[in-house]
Image (tube, rainbow, N blue to C red):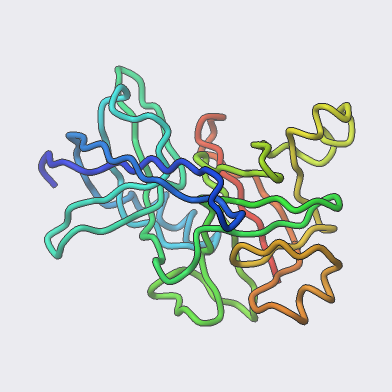
Length: 233
């Protein structure tokens, strides 16, 4: 596809009168080249449970860590999540994109270590109500929650970052306050839920609640390509 333009979407979150995080979008139009993802990338992502669509290439200076991009296609503008990036060198960055499922909320609630962590910018690669053709792999109620590089997570009003469970266990209380982990003791729900409690009670009261069955850190052989897959059932 010849050089075109796309719109990078930066989302910031602030407290709203309802006690939730209000989202504000900042749009930056950039010159870029848009192509389909390569066969290796497609099948690696497909086997993980989601369907990558586009590879956007632009100058590194144009990209500021945004997690959403609007791509102009022959059939109109398509909103996508950027699930990973790759710095090719020589001032060029590749953005790997998957179509955003606008029917699914962009906020997920994670219960971890007795705390509630809100995940903004994560997305499901598939669920029972959406077919493989439109939104990824569906298998016996199992879903894959993708945590892209641009994920924003909050515990209350504190911005927190993901760390591996072993690293979390070795942290001081101050470090733990700014961090969160995910393992098989955790569970998550689709949507913004502020109710505390155990999985059984939350699952009985709300739809689309999933126990964590696995966590995998994925990359393309380089640390700057990392994103996280959380399997829930």
